[in-house]
Image 1 (cartoon, rainbow, N blue to C red):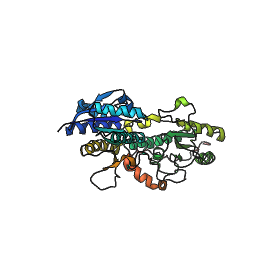
Image 2 (image 1 turned 120 degrees about the vertical axis):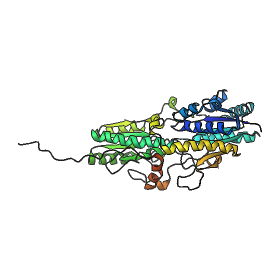
Image 3 (image 1 turned 135 degrees about the horizontal axis):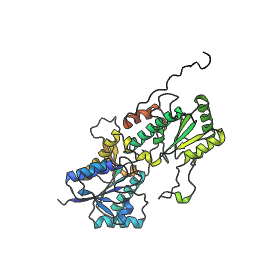
Image 4 (image 1 turned 90 degrees about the horizontal axis):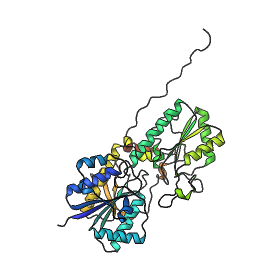
Length: 400
C-alpha cells in the first residue's frame, strides 16, 4: 500500500502546550509507519504558500521531548484570511507534493481555516483529509469541553493574582488592576479567583466580556472596598464592553491592528487606572502580564499536558481511520467513556465561539458561580499554599 504524506500547520497565538501537541503528532505519525513524509508548514499557511516547510519526520526522540517542553510554536505561526487565489495556490501546493493528510492546530481562526480548506479541497475533487486540532488560552472553541493551553494560562493567572494580592496587602498602595487576555470571552479573567479563600483575599473585583461594564458602578464598588480594607485587586479581561456593546478601551492607531485588521484591545487596565486616579483621587497601578501568561512553562498544568498530547495522537489516529472535515474535541473529565475525545464536524465549530455559560456567571463582584470553579480546579491543579494574615496585637508604646 502506498504510504501517505502528512502536513502539519500551527496557526494563531502560541501557548505553553502547542509544541506538546506537535511533538505528539510527530511521534504518533513516526510510530504508525503510514507516512512517507511528515512535513510542517513554516510560519503557518503564509509560509506554506511561499513553499517553506520543515521535515519533521527526521526528528529524534530527544528532539521531540525537548520540543514538547518548549513554549511558543516550533514551526512558526501566523494569522491569515485566505483569498480565493491563495486557496487555489494552496490546493496546487498540496497536489504537487502529494499531500493527502493535513492537520491544522489552532484556535477559532485555525478551525475556520481548516473548514475552508477542507471545503475547497472537496469542491476541487481532491482527496485531501483535513482535521482540526484545538489549542487556545482563551478556551473559546465550541463543542470541545476545554482547549489545550487554557489550563496552564489559567493557572498562571490564578497564581499571579494571589501573588499580586500578597504584595499589595503587605504595602497597601492601594489599588492594582491586572489585565488578562480575552478579547471576546472571560475564561482567563475568571480563573483569577480560583485561589480566593475569603472576602479579604485577591481579587476583589473581576470583569469579563460576558457581563457589561459600567464605569460608575466600578468606581463605586472599588471605593467601597478600599474604604473597608485599605487596598484592592481588580482583574479585567482586555475585551470588556460597555452597556452598548462597545469595547471599554481599544488602541485607536490603525497601525496597531492585528494581521486580521482587528484593533488591539490591550491597555484597558491602564485606562481604568487613570480613571481611578482621576475620579477617586487614589493611587492605582496597572499590571499586564500579556504574552507571559501563555508562555510560562513553570505554570504548565498536568492535565494540560495530558490534553495536549491526547489531541495530537487522536488527530493522527483519526486520519488513519478515515476521519475528515472534523476537529478532535475533548470530552468532560467526568465522562466515564474510555476514550476521552471525539471527532466533531468542523462546521459545528468554525463559525461559533464558546463564552462563559450564562448560568456560570452573575453580576456579583466576583461574577462566577461555584460550577465554574468545579470545572476549573481539576484542570489547573493546586496553587502554592500561602500563609494567612498574621493576627495583630496591641503593643504598649507610652509610659513605663
